[in-house]
Length: 84
Image (cartoon, rainbow, N blue to C red; front, top):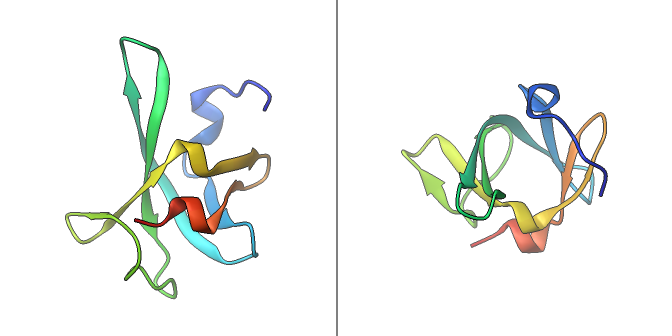
């Protein structure tokens, strides 16, 4: 995957690899010791079923950064790796 500046990710839409819009990127969690992005915090789209996903405060979806497959116009995640 190519390197991407964090400012280009602000408010970017997150989509599953099967074409469903999951929501909008809200924030990133980073392990400062390793410098690795650990997970993304996503504000889920109203039409997206969040029942199989790890939630924080019932309004923020936690998605492991390992699920990210591509970052271009959308952040594309593998829907099976993004689940609990």
